[in-house]
Image 1 (cartoon, helix red, strand yellow):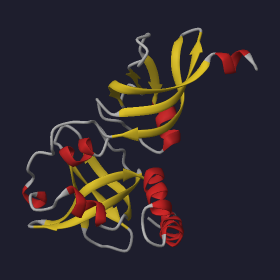
Image 2: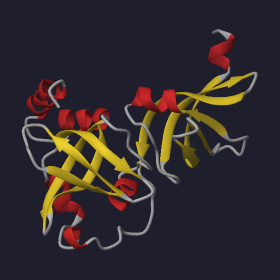
Image 3: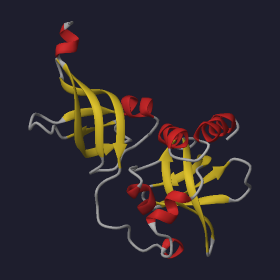
Image 4: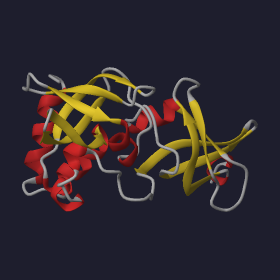
Length: 197
């Protein structure tokens, strides 16, 4: 066993804060130690450009001369919060109904965190899909980068298509592989269109 192996361990900590502009944030140590640095590059290696405060992150961490840092993320679960606030276009959709919607491969067209919304382009669809900040937060994100690959569950709202759930590309691939009927076929389709989105 190497020194690195002895200084590495797996944790499931809560995101204290993350700032995409600064390129880092911190996860709380479930064992009560110092906060764990979460660098944007480690997050991007997982397939996300941001993570919401309060999200549960399962990661491999390592002690370094500069403190404890996350070196690999295994999973991110959205914050355990109150039910999503009523958004007119989503009021009638239950979480179970949303979970049954197909995952659509998409890329972020633009997103403005200060305004609280943005849009994405779904492969083979001309209309933009509206992205609301509350849906983003309840999906485990705090922000989105232009061009970021994501998967969406979409509802047809009063003013057009709206994301009811947003997943990182990697998480969508895992869901497509295991949870959906024909999971392998769904994953193959996601991979097929990924380059064209």
